[in-house]
Length: 60
Image (tube, rainbow, N blue to C red; front, side):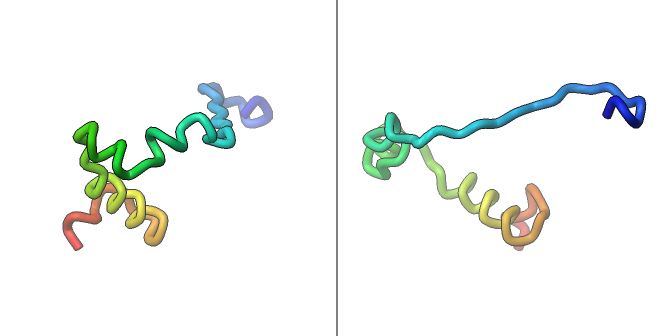
């Protein structure tokens, strides 16, 4: 960005081993017990990763 004379934010996303979430966020029963409906968002992400298009999974 500096070389091209542009400015803007730089974002870093760093993951961890997720061991702390194994019994919560990564447990389907725990997620369901908390009333989180993940089918829609999961469908959107799967659609994006297979097509590169965001926000159009429901129109297929």
